[in-house]
Length: 110
Image (cartoon, rainbow, N blue to C red; front, side):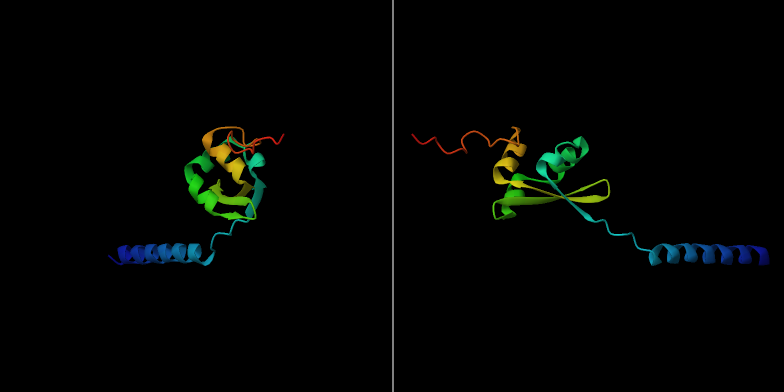
């Protein structure tokens, strides 16, 4: 019986030590990686994460001086992706983000 009590006490001490050790060392904060939308499109996994985590309305609400920014978490990194409003619209609609979608260009002046 004494051996069982000793083993149980040691098990509790070991478990308590493990809990304390994990709570003392918090996870390091990941830095924000700032990239352009064109650079983000080169990474297929990041593009998939963007489609899952973002929506067009939220991205367009973050406009500041013509640049819209969005934050995406991908592979334990936080990416801040920035592009113009026309590039974001093209990304979500499925066109080429490097050219504005049709209907957004002003008519040519004669």
